Image 1 (cartoon, helix red, strand yellow):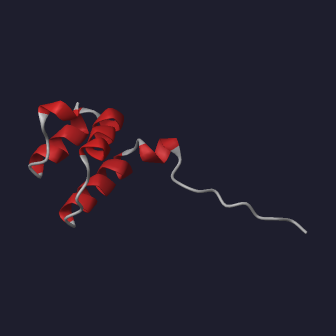
Image 2: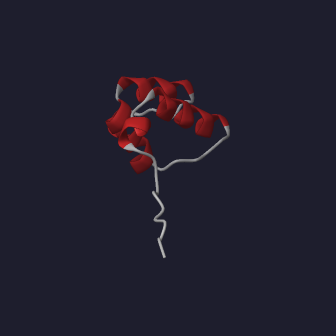
Length: 65
């Protein structure tokens, strides 16, 4: 019997694309509350583009990265 293995998560290429930034903005539009650690991870992955989105929603602070 052939066992089908799941492929969890999102690939790195997809994660670092414009889709990822759209996902961040959609979560913030829906009122998602994210910890500082998670916000810092978004900034680490996406840099200035993530900072701009966080600023738009009033969530950016210099200590995040």
